[in-house]
Each structure stands twice: as C-alpha cells, then as structure tokens.
Image 1 (spheres, rainbow over the protein chains, first blue to last red):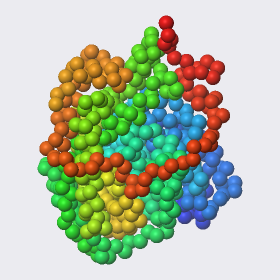
Image 2: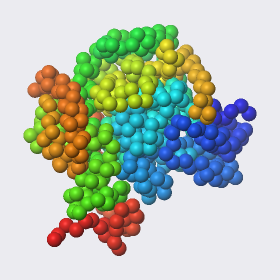
Image 3: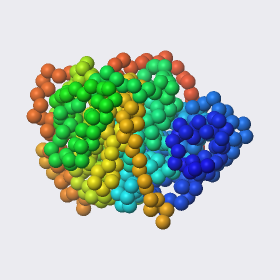
Image 4: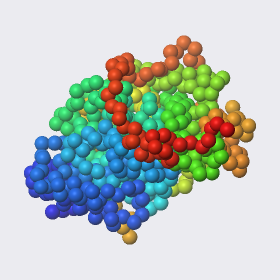
Length: 486
Length: 95
C-alpha cells in the first residue's frame, strides 16, 4: 500500500472500516515519520509506545461504528491529558501531570482515537511563531529555519510533515488559522462555545476556542463532529445537538452570497496576498456564489482591542501559577511573597510576562475604564459590524494572514510587528464567530498562503461547504523534500 | 502613554513577578510601544456604546448548588511542589 501517512484522515478511516488496513499499520507509519524527524521539534512528549499498544488492542476487536476508529492523534500540549505530562510550552508546567482528561481529547478517545503525542506550542499559546515555547523553536516543513506560525505551531508542523494524520489546536486570536495558513493545511476555529474549554490550559477565556487542524476540509468536518458538543463542565458551552458535519458536506454553494470587506485591504499588503484574494473571489463565482462588497468599519481597532482584552484575561487566568498548588516553585525564597515573585519570574518567559504586565496595568485601579471598559465597548462595535454584514451575506472571504511564513528570529524582537500577523484573524475571536483557513495558493518562494472564510455563529456547516467547494477548485498540492530527516 | 521604569516596577509588584533591574529598560520600551499601539482606540467615540459583557447569545446557565465530586484531596495534592500530609506547604508566613 502507498504511504499511509500521506493519506487524509477520511481515507484512513474508510480503509480501517473496510478492514483493508489495521490500526497498527497506520500507527507504525506515523511513528516511523516521528522517529525519522531530526529537526522540526514539533513534539514535546512522544507517546509512540502507548499508541502502538492501543492500536494492537484496537485491532484485536475493532469497534468500527465510531467516527475515528483506531486513529492515532497527536494534540497541542495545551490540552490536559490524564497521566501524560501537559506543559503548555512553559517551564512553569514542565513536570505537570494532570490527573484528569480535557473534554475535547476525551471526546476524541470516545470516538476510537488514541494519543500519539503532545505537540509544541507558544508558551501558554501566547505567540504567532512558536518562538516563545520553553521547549524551543519549531520549524515549518516548507523550509528550514522558517516559523510554522503560532501558537499551534507544533500542531501545524507535525501535520504538514505527516507526523500525525490530524491534530487539534486552540485559537485565541488566530492560533489555529495562522499556522494552518503558514503550513498549507486546513484550520478551523469554531463558534465560541461549540467545543468545550474544560481541561484546556486557559489563556483568554472569552476568546479561547479549540478546533481541528487537518489536511482536507472533509477531515475538518469529521474532526469537528467528534469534538463538538455540550459540556456541563464549561459554563459557556452551547447546549445544542451535534451536527453530522461530514455527512452533510456539500459542495453545491450556488446562490450563496459572499462578502468581501474593503477594510482587509491593508497598507503594505504584498501583491501576492491580493492576487490570492482575487483568485478566491473568482473561484467562488465559478462555483455559483455571488460576491458582495461589504464594510467592517471597525476592523482597524480589532488588534488594539485584542491587546487589551486578551492580556487582561491572561493576567487574571495566570494568577493561579503561584508555586503552591502545582507547577514550578522557586527554591530561592525567604518568604511567601518572594516565593510567588521568584516562581513567576523564573518560570514564565518574556512574552508571557509582557502580557501579564499589560493585563495587570489595564485592570489596575484608575485605568480600568480607560482601557478595559473602552476595549469592551469597541469589541461590541466590532461584533455589530459582523452582525450587520451577516444580514446581507452568508459568509465573508479574506486572506488568512498578511504574509507567508517568515524566518525564525525575523520578528522576535519587535512585539508589534509580531502582533500584526494576526490582523485578519483577531476580529473573528472578538466576535465569537467561526472561521476556517484553507490553502489558497503559494507566493514567489512557493510558500503556502491561506484563504479565510468567516461565518455566522453556529453556521459551521455552510462554512465547511464553501471551503469544500473552493478546495476542489484550488487542488493545492505541496511537495516537501523531507529535509528534516537528514 | 509611556510606561516608565517606576510604573514597570509598580505593575510587576502587582503581578507578583520580580523583574531584574537589567530588564526594566527593555520592558519599559516594549510596553510603551504596545500602549502607544492600543491607544489608537482613543480616537473612537464610544460614549453611547454598551460594553460587550458576553459574546454568547444566551445567558449563562445556573446549576444546582450541590456536591458532585469531592474525595479527591490526594489527587489535588499530587502535583504540589511541597506538601505535608494533607496540606500544601508554603514558606513561613507568621513570625
């Protein structure tokens, strides 16, 4: 059989259900790739051995009436996994072994999948290039010394290099869609509340949302079906029956109205991104959809709003890391306060500290109204922009990122230029709506570029259908020469 | 607004993160540029705008106030950096 690890999840599931391949063969093919990798650094914890045992157990009496029968999956190291180290890319949690399982991973295991490993990410998911991880940079399989994006950078890298058939990430301001765009893969951020946040290391609770990262749109539909669902343990979980996204996938998008917001044409945007966007419009028209010019007037305020709201929530969420209940504790302290201060200083990296300090400041006495309250008002305006637009259109088309993947170190010392990477992805999180990034083409260096489709709340099916229709027309192919195995 | 060195020291105190003196200059510079960036919001009049308090269309659920787990003291203590019997241990607080 041709290389199993190159196949889509949907294809592997089909072959397992037809008993043409065994879970053990599938698992072995990914373990082989993981073992051959010398440079990507996408894994923090390798669970190959346990995965192989699970595969063998599965093969003994295969239960085939599940969505993910016998499928090994590596996940972002932000999802708590019972008895398996969960680091969030931080020294703080370097030795943290949860004694509970996140709802999302648990949902995957209930559908027949098992854990292949834990994937590198920016520390506490704060970053756009995977350069803030305590466990080192991750490389993008498209070229050596190129970032995979972030914060789900290890996830995107492992997926693109065929080290896992699919993966899951989290997206607070673009952390699924931007790395998907940089690696030529598909990344979906669902509606806020569709996938439970229980057991995910928290960054900014009103923005965080888990989602699938896959090779095809069909795979994303299947994964979302397995992940989504009401969870009473998450107070913001939406109580709604899970849809059969994969079964209902349909490429007929005739008559749908797709909005194109003029505000996403930003100054200094490379010509290639413009061409990508134009091509996306053309493909939608070819598929029978109608393009409509729209305006999202508050778009330029989204990033400044995000850099108040997200750090504010982060500073509050990360207050729990005090060296007492779990995680790292500094040894160099004489009293309790010093212990807190040294623990947090020694175990948090620079970007995490920066964001905690921003958050602390904007929430501090005398500044709350000027920053946090102001940001929540602007967030309302950003959400209303989308509400207004969705009265006229079914979905919105934009580029996923303002550039393709950049070199490691290129933006590391300039926080603002790093933050600008998320300019097209952040508004979606602020509005709590779903969006998907699919490979739309390549730039002059042959680096992938993503197209983003944004949908109405809980309209994931339509979003997947539109993505499915244009994915077929784009037929994006990536040929990687496996330089990381040398 | 520029975030001077004293402000950096003050907020690090509030955030319980000790900051090395050698790093204060850089932090002050980085934070100042970030605040300059986020203060773009000030050009927008939001006098008559309700702040967004939830992005969910439905109100948060209430649950019954009843015990549904418990008896997990040992599990909770498992990950503690320092413990003694059933207690978390911290540096001495009372002289």
